[in-house]
Picture 1 (cartoon, one colour):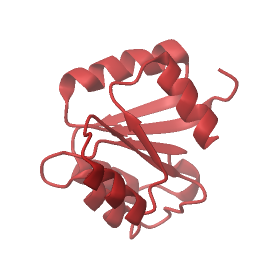
Picture 2 (picture 1 turned 180 degrees about the horizontal axis):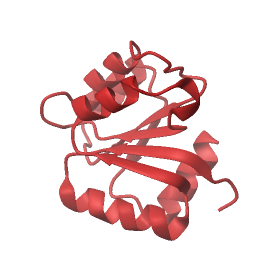
Picture 3 (picture 1 turned 120 degrees about the vertical axis):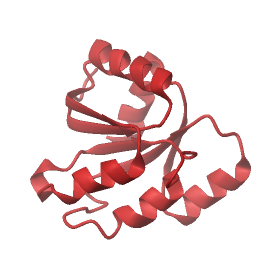
Picture 4 (picture 1 turned 135 degrees about the horizontal axis):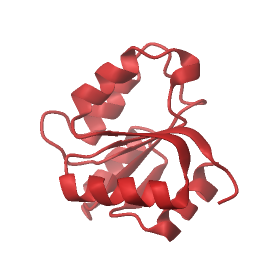
Length: 131
């Protein structure tokens, strides 16, 4: 992998997919630090405490989750102090094939939409598309 991220965050309520992504991130050496949250509220609370320099370069979030879904997460992220869309890329990572989710992603200015679970080629595509 040509580029390595300083920090990446995954937000997904599916335990098994998260465990798989943990192994994949380690195998691909995608980032110096990888954060995994199973709840959007907890992830937002963590992000709210970060300085601009500490923010992840990439946030991959599941669309369909309890409490707050990926769309609501993106809406709330916009009001988090020190978040800037030019420093942090937000991408949806989902198993949803519902076209309405793709349309809502576009309406929320989420440019990148990937299918889970990721594989090595998926990680490479994300890195190429986003960086």
